[in-house]
Structures are given as C-alpha cells and as structure tokens.
Image (cartoon, rainbow, N blue to C red; front, top):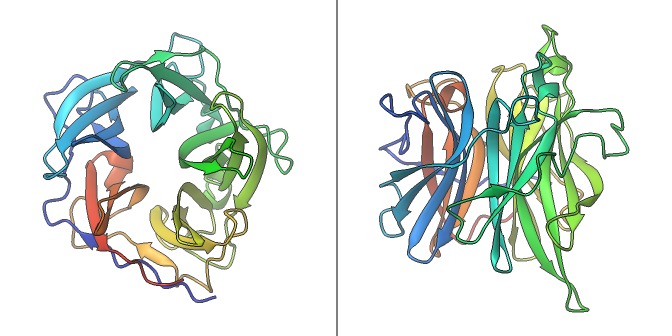
Length: 330
C-alpha cells in the first residue's frame, strides 16, 4: 500500500516551550509532550530536565484559543527514592482519565550504567484533579519482559498512547501502545545499542495490563528506521487506525517521524521504503536540525495539532505543527 502522509505545517514560532535557564525543574530539557484538552484549557505534560541531570514530570497550560502560549505550572511528579526504578529520571508521561481518577503513566530510569536497560519500568501515579499526583506503588506496573519475543528483556518506555474501546457487551477495554527497548549497552552500532520495537498491551481497569504484543519492528532495508521504531501515537480515523511513530536509522543516526496505517491496530502497513516519512530533521532550523521525536496529537476540530521535541531529546524544547482535516486517505 502507498502511504499518503499527513502534510504537517510547522509553527513559525517554534519551539513553543523551550527550556528556561532560570528554572529549577526544566532548565536543560523540555521533552516528551503529552497534550490533552481539559475544558477550555490545554494541558501539556512533559519531562523537565534540571542542571543536575535529573528529569521530572512537569505541566504547562495554555488557553484553547491560544495553544502556543504556555504558562509553566511546575513539577507534578518528583523523582522516586534512591534505589528505585525511577530514582534519576521520570519521563514519557501518558495522562488519561479513568472514571473520576486521573492516571499518569510514566517511564523511570535508575542509576545503573545499562543504557536503554536502565529504563526498566512504567510506573503509575493517580490524581483527583490531574494536577497533583501520588504514586500508586514504588514498583512499576509494566516491565519489559512480558512479550513472547523478548522474555528476558529489561528495557521499556512509554511514549505511546492509550485507546479506549467499548465492546458489544457494554464493557470498556483499553489498549496501551508503548516502546519496548531491547538495545544492548556499550555497542558502537546504533542498530544494536538503540534497538527498539513498538508494542501494545490491554486492560479493563487501567491497573493490570496483559496480552503484550510486538506490533512494529525496525526494518533493516530502510535507513530511517533500521535501528529503532518507538513512541507510537495511535488514533482512530474512521475505519482506520493511524500511527505516528519515531524511527532511528543509519541515515541520520537520530529520530525522524513516520506514519503507518492499520485496520485492526495490530498489523501495520508502512508502505515501501521511506515513503511514509512524515517529519524529518530540518537543517535550516537551529532547534530541530538534528532530530524530531515524541509525537502527541490533539484534535482541534478543523485541524489536528502535533506537539513534538527537537534537538538533543528536548534540549531545544517542544514545538508544534498542524494539519487540516479530513486527512488524506491511506
């Protein structure tokens, strides 16, 4: 199938949320955007980096009618205790409302020198208002050893999305798309060091996640994603599932973003070669000349708005782009 990629138009004011050198919580990085509309407010959850190299889950807000005018609200989830899976980094927030509770899923990094394998759990914090979160447990609720293909793997990260499905019997089921980090540390080959796959798991309550499956893997023949595919943002578009995901390949050595389509959300079509490239590094832009990564998409009615990161995994901040709807056919 030929993939007709979405024509994204970058905002000329990018980055809309750069690091703030005077800040105690996001002076060096603003990365991993997760945007959600709550009433007349746009909430942008993200991971902020401080001068000591730590990452925490933070929040910025903007009026719906001015979605690039953000005000920083500070840290909503701090680091875990020493020795825990999230003792040095809390990154990749996914925030969803389950009934009257907000769930914040996030990825932790410990202090071990294991490369991608030091990200070994997705944790959960909950909240009444989506503004003040408390950990449900000091142990992750999802680990990287739950797919049949990689039973001995440790690395895992969020950076995906959560879909709600209403079944014919009236029950509600959820799909959580995430990143399975299988790369081995200390390799000079990015196809080994940075290997990642996109996976999905399932739940009825947002607490217990089962039936883990790999749904997308690197393609050795495509130099934009022969090392990794990651951060799958999935949404419904009529009868289709659409995915925007990040690829690492030997062409650039860093992330670009591509698209895939599916009729069931499990088997994905990426077209031939790199025709599915949707957003690439822009050599003419100081903030995104190296990489573009971590998509999050908000439906604004007559258009979709994409939030994403630039160089250095958010060292230059978070930007945005838009596209009109209806989207081009697959």
